[in-house]
Structure formats: structure tokens, C-alpha cells
Length: 479
Image (tube, rainbow, N blue to C red; front, top):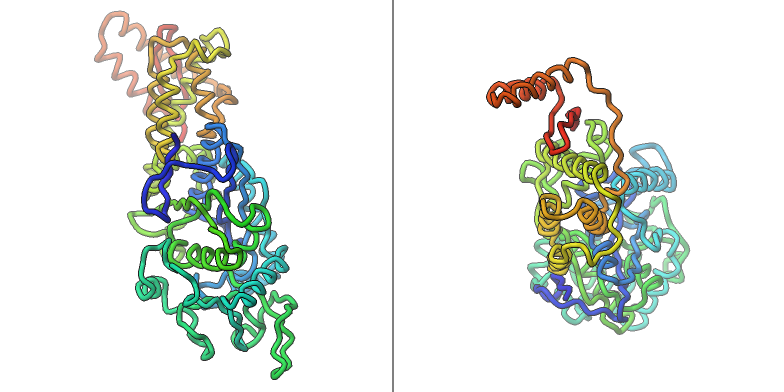
């Protein structure tokens, strides 16, 4: 039985889909104004692990992950400037060029991390009409109102507005910020913008569209751009319908973005918006939040420049539960890279001395399969699932072909590309071979102290020895 921790109910619940065997899932994608740091990429890996798990458990998943290329201001509320416009000014490019540049980088990053593509990747600027349609519905139903500066959602009309965050409204405003207060016609401080008009502080907005709303007294033409929150509501409705099985995003979205999505979607559509809300925790550095100003954000390009494989970073991410904070350090990444290399070496050894891949699962120790599945069904418990994987690796009673079958089966979820591992062709220097031969002589004489000293000397020179019943193996030590 699959159980998920639902932020909405603050508890683990049995997972029941709207349609048997099918999952409708929406995942908040990037705002493409900058290279995504590895904290953002951790969220993408965790979502990928969850989708792979659902498919492993025989669900068919329809995943939608969006791109925000307009409307996301520098604050999560209705304050500041549009992030795309800010990036355009910074780099002397148009917002379209900024979006293209950083979407391309993001796509390469997710490919390097072996994150599979969603079913649909909607772009906000491609769905303006759908957003305007939902806004008009909210106006017609009196859940929204128009001022000269914007169209706002009236939170006083929304039942249980803060049910996701669990806060009272005053506390929610305090945590999220003061909200947009520069509009004197705004009814409540917590009311949020559905549409900004090209006037006031947004008079020079770079991306605007015609709208059906105008002010005859000011002869305004309705030109403007959407608020950030309405984007996800409109795009999820178009591709997944009024009610979703799962909506996933970072915990920072709970008090503002996801709270507002619920309010506008449920009041526009007249139906429950999402049955299960999943939220991933942050990746920290030195125990604190990643910060550009303090130089504590890292891109995947920087990870690769240090000589680490993107799959080593993926493996590092999988060592922690998606709802747990995870602290990044180069030492922790180095340890993950070495552990992944050890796993890969085992796979190569099993391949070399096996009779092939076992095709009959009935011949495999089914206890491992059961325990692995149980870990996945416990709110996607990645550390426990990895522990089961290592139990398989270390089981001396199993045939190697049985181990390979299980490990490749488990990797359908981990996404570490274990099936395609190939031995490195690095040539072992004669000096290292000679030292290894000398070590072997001391082992035969049972002078293990001297043999261990030679092993340490070999490691200092950048190589390591592994002993097996079939003889020694020498490997070059890499990050």
C-alpha cells in the first residue's frame, strides 16, 4: 500500500487516484531567468524519483512541468520587478532570448542528471488566453475585482484560504511579507494579483498582452501581463483537468504560491484542486540557505568542472529523503562519488563472472524485492531503498546473475544508468603492477603488515587494489 505525506492533511495517507492506475501530476518548474542552482536541481531529481517509483508500482503517470517566462516578480508576492525583465536588463537581451538561453541550460542539466522528460512542458507565455479565461471566470463569480493598477483575487471570499499552510491569515501575511500595498484601491493586504496592467510601476513592462479588461474613464486599453500564481492554475487545468492527483513543489511555495493556486483554481472551477500535495525540503550549504550574494550557490556546470559526474550528484541527492533537508559540501559529494564508483565496480564484477542476466524473477530472493517495494511505498523512502540495494550487493548466497537482475530492476527507480556501465580502459602503470606483484608475495608469506604498507603506497600514487576469489583488480582512483 503506497502512503504519501500530504501537506494538506499534515499526515501520511493511503494513495488513491482519481482514475485507477493513472496519476495526474503537476510539478512546479523553473523560472528561466538564471542558471538553476543544484538546490533547484535536487527538486527535479526528487520529482523524477517519485515519478519513476509510481511507474515501478504500475501506475501510468501523466506529468506536467511548466516553464515560467513572465509574471514571476522578484518577490513571491506582488512586489518588485519581473524576474525576466530584470535578467534582460542585466544581460542586454530580450526576455525571449533570456528564456531561450536558460531553458536550454536547464534542459541540458536535467539530461545530464538522467531526469526523464515530462509528458508536457507548457510555457507561461504560450497560455495567456487560458489565464485570461480563468481570470474572467473569477471576475464573473465575484472572487476577483479590478482596480486601475491590477485585477486582484479577493481572499476574503475564499473558504479556508490558508488550509495548506495551516496558518491563520495574519500569520500567513507576516511570514510571506506585507504583500502589494501600493494600490490604494486594494481591498485586503493579502489579496493577490491575477493580472497587472501596464501602468504605474509596470508602465515600462517589457512583456505585455492585450486583455478584455479596460477602464473607460482612463481610456486604458487593458494591456498587461499575468500574475505568477494564475499561470500554474491555468496550465494544470488545460493539460490535467480541474482536479489533480499530485501537485509537487518546494516547501517555500506553501504559504504563498500554492496557497494562491488553491484559492483561484477551486473558486474558478468549483472543484477540489489537488488531492495530494508533496513538498521537497531545501538543499543547504554549511547548514544555511543557498545564497548568490554569499557565493554558496553552485551550478551543475561547476560540479562537472570539479571533475564530478552528474550521476554522482544524483546519487548524493538520493541519499536523503525528499522531505528532509540535505546539506551540500564538497566532502559529501566526494563520498557519494566514491560510493557510486564502488557500486559500479561491483556491477562490472558481477557482469564479468556471471552467466548473463537472470530473466526469471522467481529465482531471485523475493525478500529483497518485497523490502525494496515496502521502502518505496513508505512515502518514497530513498535511503531505505538504497539500503536494500546494498544488501543485494553484499549477499554472498545469491548468484551474480540474480544480483544483476535485481539491481537493474531497482535502478528503474534510482536512474543511475547501471545497465550501461562499461569498464574504463585506463592502463595501469608498470610501477603500480610491480608494487602489486610485490604485495602479492608478502600476502603469500602471510606478512600482511608489509603487504598493507604496499597497498597504502599504491593508494598514495592514485590507485587501489581490490582482492576477490578470482584475483586482484587494480583501479585508478577518481573523484
